Amino acid sequence: MSRRLLGSTSNACRLFSSKSNVDHYAVLGVKPSASLKEIKAAFYKLSKEYHPDRNRDNQEEAAAKFHQVSEAYEVLGSDERRRAYDLTRIRTAPDLGSLYARRPFTPEPTKQYEDIDIDYKSFEHFQRKTRQRKQFHSHFDMPEEFYAEFGANKREFKSEYEPKGSIHRDSRTIRREEEERLREIQREQERLQKKYPIPTFEEMMQKKREKERLQTRKQIAGLVSFATLASIAIIIAKKFFH
Image 1 (tube, rainbow, N blue to C red):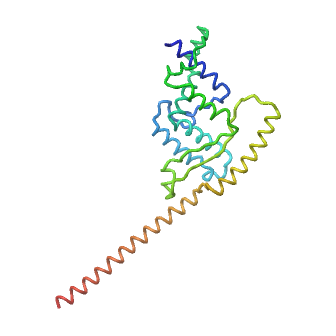
Image 2: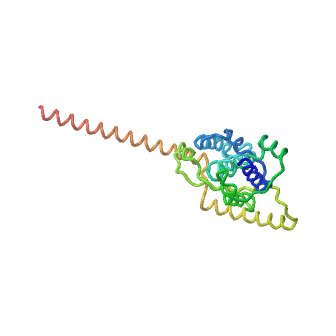
C-alpha cells in the first residue's frame, strides 16, 4: 500500500513540477487543517484589508496581494481543487523525501490515485486550469458579508491575472502570447467596465447611508402618524364625554 501511495504521489509531483510553489494556506494565514468556514473568514478579512480602494497610496502592491488572496481562496474554497492542491504539497514533506532517498521509484498505473482518494481526471482538470491556460481567470463569488456590511447587493467578482510559471516556450511563442494577452486584457477590461462594474467602497458607504436615511424617515413618519391618531382619539374622547 505504501509503495502504491509513493508511486501515486511521485506522479502527482511530476504533473505540477512547472507550477510555482505557492502556499495558499500561508497566504490566507490559516492551517492546512482549517475548515471552509475559517478559510472563508480569512479571505473576507484579507480581501477587505488589501482592497485597492482602501490602499490608494499603494494600490499596485495592494492589488498584487489582493490577487494572491483571491487566487488562494479560489483553490481552497473548492473541495475538489483543494484536494488536488493538498496532494501536490505532499512532495515537500520531509518523510517522503527520505523515502525517495532510500528506495528507487517504481512506476505504477495512473489509476493508482484512487489509493489517496483522488482520480487521475482530477489532476488533468486541475493541471489544465493552472498550467495550460494563457491567463488565470479568478471567477468566484465574494462572501455575502463583504457587501452586506455596506448595504450593497452581492455580485460576482471577476478578475484577470497572469501567473508566474516556468513553462518552456520559444521567443516567438512568448511574443505572440504577450500580444494576444494584451489585447485580451484590454477587451476584458472594457467588457467588465460595461457589464460587471465592481462597486467602490465609497459607493457602498453611500448606499449604506441612503439606507439609514430611508429607515430614519420611516421611523419619523411612523411617529408622526401615531401622534396624529392619538390626538384625534383624544379630541373624540373629549367630545364624547362632554
